[in-house]
Length: 352
Image 1 (cartoon, helix red, strand yellow):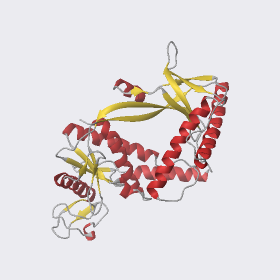
Image 2: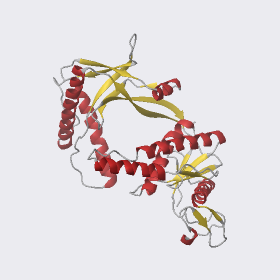
Image 3: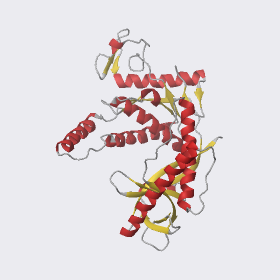
Image 4: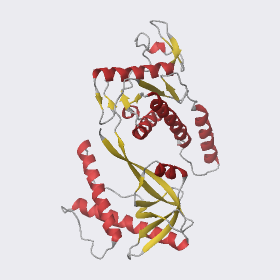
């Protein structure tokens, strides 16, 4: 059975004193300068690496990351065929290492090297989700990084890894349609909570912040939380019944419309988490799933008489529009399995 290693990241709260906080800021600023220096030099000079003699550990770490940045940049240029320019570094982070604390009230100690080869040790607190992962057999990597978020607070981003078996497709599929009227509608007649209330509440909060001339916050945060809840419920259902999950292809859906953004987010999030649960996720082309009658197969835009009602003009079948779309999505997944157009390595259903 094919196996793969998956990685998840978590942010932990650190508790530095004033002096250590200033040391972190200085090390991060120096690291950013080193990183931009090596990216620029390696981009314009035909050499594989530059000497860092006398520059310290931060410079060595920056050059390694610069080589990775340029490799990803050249791969993207080759794939898109667009003109290339020197990448610009815009981050505020610093590489570090983490070890579990012994005989201390803190859970971990984070070590950062400054420019003068001195170690800065900062205490960090764990949280429930990370502890759950470690109890489930995930391994904590000793490599981590200190990052500064938009609010100005510093956190440590840690990584956990686990080797899992790659899921393979089974016989039955569960189709999922994501929208605003019902956050998630499944082909097993499940209708999720509406996203309209969350969206209305967030837009009112944005107007109030704008009126008071406060900084606007991303309004998609609560929507993501609700969609994450639906992903958990859906994957639990598929794992319990031995079903595959089939959703609309996120690359086809990703645009500025909010309902399609929610579908794209749900599809990507479900694909990321399904590997952990052993559930196979298929992506299908979303064409005509909302205007095709599941009962007779007739495609007609006039059948979508209302936002939440589908009434077929050919056979008269009347059903919830989102439920009809979920059934069509599940059927496309079953047809793909029958035609053997499934790519198990990428986890996609290649449906025209």
